[in-house]
Length: 340
Image 1: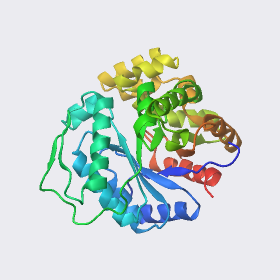
Image 2: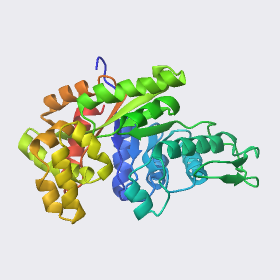
Image 3: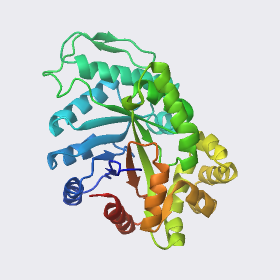
C-alpha cells in the first residue's frame, strides 16, 4: 500500500451503552465505515442504532442473508435505514451455506449465483422505482413479486444504494465484477488465493460486463490478531477458524490451499458435535496461513502485502471461542494500529 487504505470495522451486536461510545469513537478516529454481520438476526437494527448516534461513518450490512427474506423486505429495510442515516447505507448481501438457509431458516437456497443475481436485480428495482407505482410484477425463478398495489409513500433517500457481494470461490468473484458495486473479501482468504484466484476472476467479470476496475470497490475482511506472543495469538484464533471450517461447502477451498485433510477432520468432528476435537484438528500452520498475526509491525507489513490489490480493508477479530474481554483487547489493538 503506497498510501493508507480506508479502514472499516466490524460492529457486533452490543448493548446500547457499549455500542454508542464505540461507534462514536470509531467515527472520531476516521474509520470509513462499519459492517454489521448477520450471525442470526438481520443486521439492520444494529446499524439503525449506529446511524442515530453518528453523522459520517458508512453503515454496511456485512452481510445480510439474501435468501432468508423477500427481496421486497430487503429493499424496504435498506431504504428505511438509508433515510435514518441520511444516505450512508451499503447493502452487503450473501448466500451463506445451504444447510443454514434450507435447514435453520427453512428457505429455498437453489443455485446460489443465479438466486443472488435475481435478488440483486429485484432489490435494485424496488429501490429505484418502488415509489412510482410502475413496477407491477417482477418475475423470477425464485421470487415473483406482484407489486401492482404496492407503492412507497415517498421516494427513497437515494435512487441507488451500493450493493456489495461477498465471495469465497472464483465464480462469485466474477459475478461481483459483473453486477456488484463492491466485493467484500472473505476473511478465510489467504494472500496467495487473493492474488491467484480473486483478482483475476474479478477482472474477468468486469471485462465480460464491459465495466472498468473502478466500478467495484474491493474491501478485504482480514482476521487480525495483534500480539507479541505469536503462540498465544494462534491459540486465541484456533477455535474461530475451526468454526468456519465446519461448512462442507468450503472443503474445496481448504483442499486448494493445502489443508483438505485438516478440514475433513474438523468437519467429521463437527458432525458428532465434538467441538474440542474440531479445535485440536486445526493446526498452527492452518491458523497462520489464514489469520494475520504477530506484533504490530509484523501485522502492518502482512496486511499491506495481502491488501496490495484492495481498495479498503476491514481488520476483524476472530471472536468465536474467545472470551469477550479478550476480543475487546484485540479490537483495541486493531484500533491503535489502523484507525486515525
